[in-house]
Image 1 (cartoon, rainbow, N blue to C red):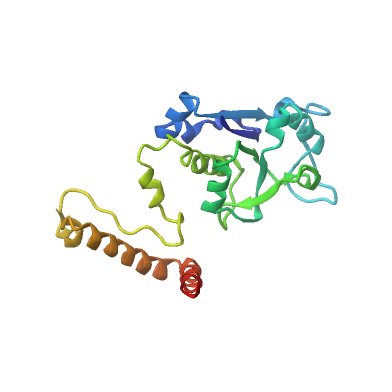
Image 2: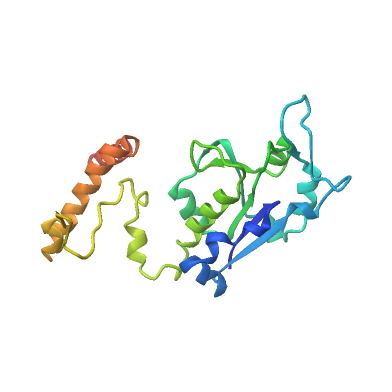
Length: 236
């Protein structure tokens, strides 16, 4: 069973959004497992889990001894899962990362708080520093929920219509095209006629062209990668 091990000082924040909709249903049906490890249960001295940083500075830092005691509660199988720590200096997490992790047995996440964690935790336990965006949160719990949800929705039989996943933005290198539903006219704005035509080939071509246009306009970085890939395929 795919599982997520989450080290946090706020286990009460979970399952949060992981407990609703299809992700929550899959959790209830034991299609995946959420294992919360409360770091506050592993103090090392004076009932504390953190201390002031060496060299001075603001905030408190998680002790490596605390994490070591908590990590040792995992089974050997759990300890061998991919380990990540959210950090503003980490590389950006991508849809491909979610796909790769969803095809393994799970993930282990350390949620930092306050000033962060002792660097030796990252080094000794080989935690991969990642970021979900160029902004700063109070801690890693919200980011952990985002990553876990992104992985779980890719697991077999979690999302009913697998085609909805295949068409997602970032599954390829293009953004998803605009989508519409009833009514055909809303406050003077009408659904593109091609989408109402029933002509599947024309609809597919329209959606591809829209995806290309939106990606070129909104995400030139992705568009560059897409063009590069198309050129490579043309040469092959």
